[in-house]
Length: 301
Image (tube, rainbow, N blue to C red):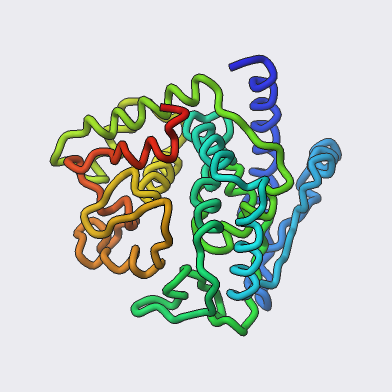
């Protein structure tokens, strides 16, 4: 990693420490009317506040949201040249490698914006959500208002988490359209390649859970178990990691409920399990779909 990127990462980590203090659950006061937490800035030092002001960071960003307005905004941003698929793949590789955790959601949100159809809220078959896009809220309909403090969602993005619901996609795109594009380092690219090879060489009888343990033991990926799970889920959502239930492809839209409904056929999504489709449907024998990997990430492979 060159000196500029190394310095950028130091500043990034410094910012994360400030945000960890700010968005700690004990620093939030619950607004029962809007069902959001409001965070208190007096927990920060003067220097920390100045740093966030310099970054134009809004400590509380309370947004009234409804299904139709979110989808409309996302579809418009999907046509913006600053949110290209090439940029998304670069920043995702940088997230996998660890030099730019903020890039974790970029791949999913960009493809979501490119392909989500223009639609109104359509109740899912089994869940209180839109069956097409997955939107849900306190008043999950196209007409009723929901509230979100998207500043705390933005913080999750900087932590390197995959926030792949509709409000997460909105929050990612709304900020990223104003951020400079990031390129992965050589170390990021090497880690990304090694991860795909590691997945492809998994024992045929491996389950998602047993593979996650194997990946942890390999120490290939920096970060915690949640980040490793988010990487695997991201690769599954674009079909690079196939699943036994439904075929996914980055060139076409698949409805939310069509992805989620097959969970009833799987043993690893029941009870206390937090495993979700499509990663939940992967098996070691399915390996990696290299054709799709090269279509999306060929320049890095």
